[in-house]
Structures are given as structure tokens and as C-alpha cells.
Image (cartoon, rainbow, N blue to C red; front, side):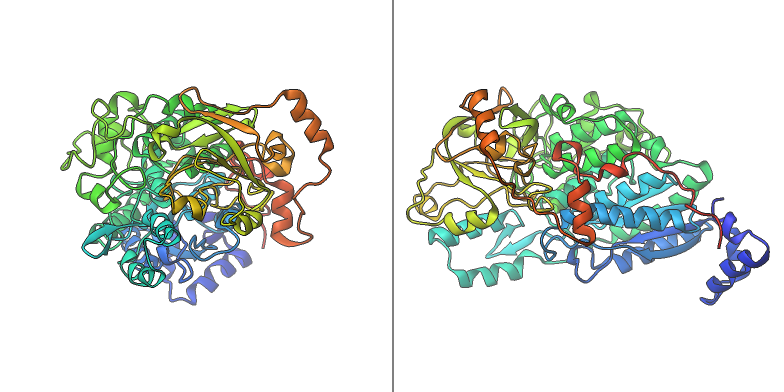
Length: 566
């Protein structure tokens, strides 16, 4: 066992390693057991993960009953709802925290406790870089919100705010709504990024079956946590590592699954980063090739009607995977030692309105499409399942905002030259330009158009949008404006053509004109920080089509500490 190089030593070093652990009342024989780390993102500043103390206790029970030595350790927690400027700025930092915490300590295996959006990819990225036996336990979604007798969720926030802007809802009513929106602990109750990430780890094989959909407050969530704690001991014995599970085929399974569930567009940027850590070749174009003919078969907000709680009652992700059986790589290994097809073989659907089938899908549109064209030399993404059909092929004049501050200042101006055919363009919201690539791409429409009853327009950004968001929104434009690509020189009035069926998006001006404009461009919006983490980030973050990871973190660096001395 890896921990033996700490606790199995004789002499001064061995004495130090054991003696200081014994001040917690650890008897000597415990050091002969496999040491299992519980990587916990509990924080009262991350409300989605605020129940993780109880979840960690359940994991510990499982480790103890299987004969292990559990040790819980904290890492930086990313609270999507509170942190400024954006949690995406800190995803790579947390991955480094996780990686170095695991590598530097006497751990034989690790259980990752994650839930809120960026906690899942950051923990998986970090653990993959070390590559010791690893299992993921998600925190689970909150119970479905309720307001005036109807179900509500995070995706409704955008509708409520638009209703306030259009005069259909009073500001004081929002206080009543917010009291019913988050009824329990857990992450967003819709198929937002947190739920998409939970589905991702289950589809990849990194968690036990049913991990994705069990509500946070359901007793079954603690049962799954305890079973995961037990299972990691066998994984250590069998030496099942992330590199054994995260094959190219497993990544393809996850991409197909994300398309079928109408998952978050953020899935793309996180899966690319994880693939980069384990050395699996994966490109943006692969997402489109694998997603193109996959309809949306899960009827959940923001693409549909229902919520994660309903998905669990309908049979959970195993049913979805079973319905995708003919499209998946069935033999992929999962953390319980079984193939993914063995895990879903006996799954039963209890509500075919919530989980449909590919031949009779809830929505014939796929959950993800990758676009190319002169606006995005390295690609962009859109979520057709949550977009407006009539806008899938559209040409309109650009209304350009050079940054988010200008958008906020101008969007509701009476003299803003905009109508329903216009295309809103937001620049400098990318990894370097913001910095951190915030979730601002699904721009709220101009107030004067909302008052006319307009509910959707094409919006284009080099930023991201919340997985709970919806609309005809083009995201992750690469290269971002701050890198000086074509996107940086689009001007007000330029005609833009979006053609989702043909996977293209172009500004209708010549290559010569684009080149001339770029040559005339004298300033960049990026102003690298002079110190600290943000300085490191702006200097080393890669573009969206590469996963926005740091250029120096590609590949698995292994579990050996930098120096083996005290």
C-alpha cells in the first residue's frame, strides 16, 4: 500500500508520521489498514454542499466496515451562487489543491465529495492527475421548489426576472418565490451544470449506479455514500485507478449521454479538461460527431418540464443509459468492477413521460451542437434542445457590447438600436478577457423587447451560461475576443448568419475586411493581474476549445511525492 511508505517506516520518520496521528486517539493497529482520504468540499459558503459533513460520516461508516482507515481532508470549495467574479476562475486552482493534497499525503485511495457546479470537475481533474483508486459521491439535487401550487426550479429564475422587466411580476413577489425555490439542501433541481456533472461521472463509470439523481435529503443518498466508502477498499485491493476507467470509449459514452439528457454546455469545457489530465485525445469536433444524431430523451428543465427529483423516481440515469444501449460502449469498466451495461441491465422506467426513448424522444433536437465559421475559428457551442426552433436558421444585424459592463449600461437604453431580428453580441467574457469566463452568455433581452412579448433572440458570447439557462445562445466562441480573433472585430450592424442544421455561424464580411479590422485594432481588453493566482491564471489558461485548463497541467503526473524525506 502507498501509505506504508509513511506509516510502515522505522526510525525517526516513522515515529513522526505515526505519533502525531496518534494524538487523535488512533491505536497502533490502524496503521496496517488501507488509508482512504475523503476529499470534502463542505462549506457554509457553498450552500449546495452544506450537508457534506453528514455525507462524509456515511462514507466513513463504509470505509470502517470494509476495514479501512478513513481520513477526511478539506479543499477549497466553489460556491456558484456566492463567489465573485466567477467560480470558473478558481476551478483550476481547486484541481491543483486536490492533486497536491492527495499526492503529498499517505493515501491509498480517495473518495471525492462534490456537488456544486465546479466542485465536480475540479476534484476529478485533480484526482486523475495523481491516479490512485478514486470514487465519486455527488451531493445530490435539492427537492423541487414550490410556489403557489406549482413546481419551480433554478431555470425559472430567468423567466421570473424577464417577467419583472416586462411588468408582469412585481419585485416584492420575488421574495416569496425565493423562499420556495430552494426547499432543501442539495444542488440545483434542474438539469443544470451540477446535475450534468453528476450524470457525467456516472456515465464515465466513476461513481456507483444511481449516483446522479438521488435527492440530497433522501436516505438513499447516505446509503450510496456508505456503499461507496466500502467499495473504495476493494478498488484499492484490485488497484482500479481512474486511468483504467477513463478510456476514450468512456468519454464517448459520457458525450452521448449528455446529449440525450439535454445537459449543460459547460459539460464540454469540463470534459475536455478531464481528458487532458488523463491523456485521452478529445477535440471539440468529437462532441458534435457523437451528439449530432442523439435526440433529447429526458424531459427536464431547462429543455423540458420536470426536475431531478422526478428523474430519480422515474428510474434515474441507469434507465437513460439502458435506452441508449445500442449507442454506448457496453464493456467500459466502472468503479464497482462491473461493465456499464451490467449496471443498467435491469433498470426499469417508471415514467415514460420523463424518460423517453430515442425512437420516440421528448425532443428530436440534440442537447449539444458544435458550430464553426469565421466568427469562431476554433469553434463554439449551442444547446438546440433549449433553443427556439424558428431561430435555428437566422440572419440578423449585430448589436455589439464590448464587455459585460457596457452590456449592463446599454441593454435597457431607450435609444438602443435593436429589434427581435437583431443578434446580441457580448465580447471579452472569455477565459482571459473577464478573466474566468463567467456565466453571462444568456443575456437578458432588452426591456423594451420583453415588454413587446419577445422571449428569445440569438445571443453570441465568448463566455459561458449557467446550465440552468435556456434560449438560442451561442457560447464558448474561440478564440475569445481578448485573443484578437475575428470575434474581436465584429461591429454594430454586421450581418450574422446562424445555421444550426449545418453547424455554421458566420459574420457576412470578407476575409480581407476581417484582416484589415484586426490590423487596425490597437487595444486589447485583457489586463493581466500583477500578482497572485489571477496573474497565474491569465498567463497560463488555455482557450475554451481546449478545456480552459492551465497549459502546464496537461497529463498525469502520478502519485509519487516531489521529495520523499521529512
